[in-house]
Image: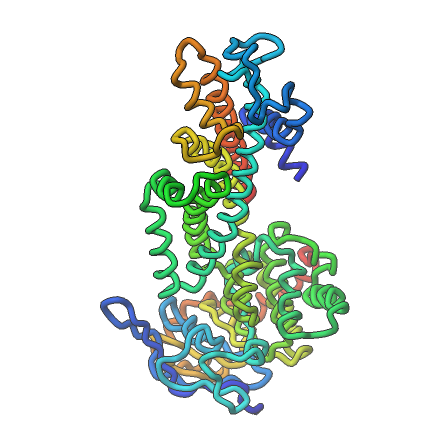
Length: 270
Length: 277
């Protein structure tokens, strides 16, 4: 088993509103191991996004610590931490600045982290776009000229531009249609070993988790209910809540998957 | 740009606005060649032709010391436009910066900056300008200062509101997570998304600034004679209504056309940018 890349120790988060306190996360501990894909599942309000934001450093935890490579991450992240942990957001419509070209959005990452020589950077941008399956001249386009799936690919390229180690995928495919969703997931799967990435995959879609994640962490109402290897967890869920979640997934048998794959390789392989 | 122009020209009202403003701009820029009596912009006296009704070569008649009214209206446009451009040239950068900082930083910064803005907004603009002009000498420079002081808060508030909305967009979070500086996020990420509204407001405001500058000179607090100014021309002529009607009517029409033209273009831009998004 590979060593942990990121460790979360007893993390809690309480949001203070004007008249009351809302606990969003309660004493959560888990780790993310190098090169794995850890899925975080749960219904809305379970604390999935809070976990992501704590790891990304959007806000600090009320309690607990987060370690990366064994060292605690400070509340005010340094540039190096920003580079190492990147996010692919849920909404492809707002993830790219509508008034800046795709190239400019990617260039920002290179400029901030001083990756490559200044005059090489346009070349790097084109290479990044090709790496996520887009033509290099998309750099001149504005997001309005891109489809949802293409925008998510650019968002993935942005994470690659930072040469990040941990990519937080916050429901990256939930607003895409099924075919595009499958292609983006396949891209993510290919990139993981090639770029030595680790994924924290936040989703409520358990059918995707089954094929995509190495381990699964189930959250409910701000608590971590259980965490385990995907197959084991799906085969023998310990917690009744996990059982209910799993039983709500439409069952796809092995035979049906084979049929689907054949179809995909045939006429639909656009 | 060409496409935007084509869209503007296809709507009759915006086309009218374009034509009106085009004429005014050409008059203002080439005043020296267009005005039939360029020397009449200054302190010239021609008692042989004083207070004449419109008739060739005096298209709009002459004033009480015999100066060609048409020439003076053209030069007054030039001064009004310079005033408008200078006022916006100062008020917009100041207001936009205040709004961006207040909207992006939030909390105490927002509180401090926006309360100052509110104070300025709560003073009736003409009263503020009059008090500034009262303390200072009523010159063109001070006139610009007065109008600028009451104009920036509107841009601060506009950009503040927009920034608060844009701040929630995913692209701002993405830039922050990459590690971009606050300056970059404010001016390179958020500001371009506010541009359409800022440009629209600027176009509308050019008309209003001409109007307010005229109001100040009407009250004797703006541009001083013998420099031609639409507001003071209306004020001077009003004493001789209805007999010497041209003294008031033509400068008033000139103000009306400018305000109307800039409003038409402003509305057209608002629609154009609205449809773009």
